[in-house]
Amino acid sequence: MHGGEEQVGREDIEALLEVRRELGPSYDAALVDSFADRIEKAVAERVDAQVTQRQAARSAVAAAGARQLALGIVSMVAAIPVSIVLGVTGHLAALLVAWVGIVLVNMAHALQSRPRD
Image (cartoon, rainbow, N blue to C red; front, side, top):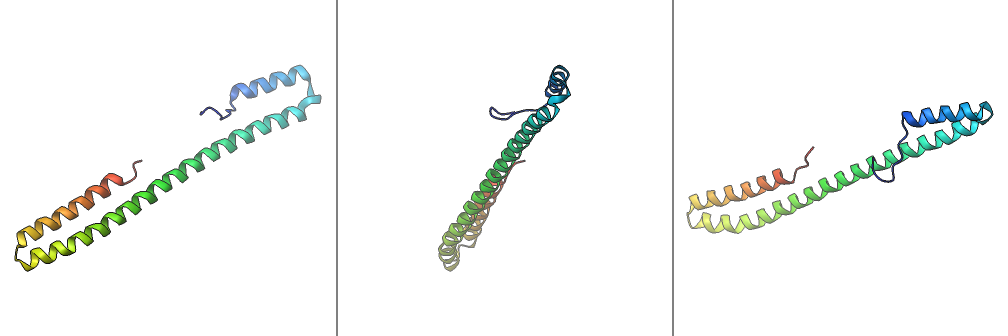
């Protein structure tokens, strides 16, 4: 677990039972309340950590999507004049190479920025 997280494990239960044996049943309610508070705190910390982790993952995915959209727009803006110039001048092989390059750049970016599990 991380620095601030409180773990509740078997040792804690054994210690609780030992304290109960020493203090007797008159302290049962206080011991149970104290132990329940520790469990609630540990669960809350774990939930908070998981929520934070999921939010960070969603933010990273959203940022990657925005970058991919921006690259797509820039690619289309660049492709239009290239297509016009090469298409009008009859350089179809150069036009094909330019479009293949644009597609490959976008594919490489998409593959590089996808989330890894």
